[in-house]
Amino acid sequence: MRRWMPMAMAALMVTTSVLTAGCGSTKDPEFTSGQPGLVGSGAGVADVQPSSSAGALSTPAASASAVPPTTGAVVSGATTAPIPAGQPQLVRLGVPVAKWQAEFDRIVAAKYRLVHFDGYEVGSQTFVNALFRPSDGVAWQSRSNLTAAAYQTAFDQFKTQGYRLADVSSYLVAGQLRYAAMWRKASGPVWVAYHGYSQSAHQTKIDALTKEGYHPVAVSVVAPNNTPQWTALYVKENIGSWLAKSWLTLAEYQTQWDAAMAKGMRVSYLSATQYAGSVRISVIFEAGTGAYEARFGLTAADAATKTGSNQSAGRLTRAVAGYAAGSSARFALAWS
Picture 1 (cartoon, one colour):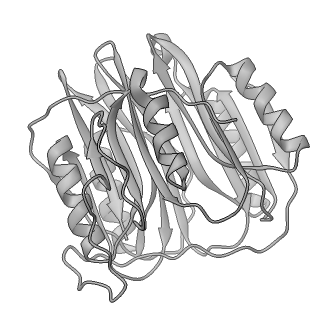
Picture 2 (cartoon, rainbow, N blue to C red):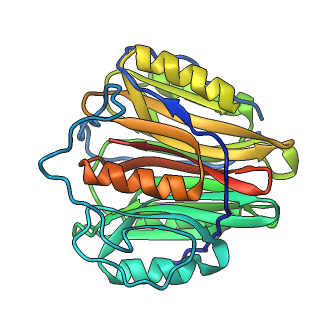
Picture 3 (tube, helix red, strand yellow):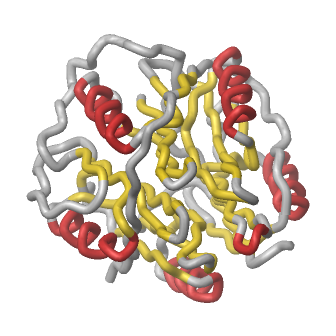
């Protein structure tokens, strides 16, 4: 009952930019740009787990529970290698969209569940990054390559069946807007989601929801025909300090990262899109403690290496975004 589309990756070479994290207590307004679309919401059980968060450590000590990745745990591009068992995570980077379904099916059959899907474009090609965790017995559903109408239909269907939206993203396939989403049949805080919003509509909504005690867990922006559209998911719970920013250049992302680090906040979410030949980043920072690392501008090989070394040190991948750098791909990630 799960359908997904694949995405590919490209080779790369560029300098790595380093980020750091911190702790803080501000909810600054979003930067954004862009007409409202459909809105949906769901009720749930109040007060779920506050997210764990971070300080800024580049080379923290390994955790006692660290599990070094085995072959097939962290993979760039398409692969037919066996899916390893017993891993705390599986990470896929730059899977060509045409090969995504096959890889998704193999991983799910090995008893892992999808937790995040990130679609991105390099030239005319679309690729997928994805994070999986071990199955936990909770029923879940996922869909990708959905038009706005198909996404709304799935959204309404799963809400009626008692599922809550856990992840949503927007991306382009052959220049056409597509959505990917994942639902879990589990209790949790009240939540609200929308898609296809302009910058002004998104800003109005995030301001209103913040006043009502919600915080964003995903803010995905994509620009079909160079027209930015915002898709977002919020939950109503108190997680302490957080900061959400979107439509950032890479330089602005570094600036925001530095400011967030100074306030004790770490990256919990990333997405990226192309606009008029440049890259735009969306990021959510949350307060927290513990070992943490974040990077951007990584090649696929460097991203896989960094992910493996972080897993060996007991840190899992919390956020990933792919984007184009000329005719190659680059990756932004965060681990804790």
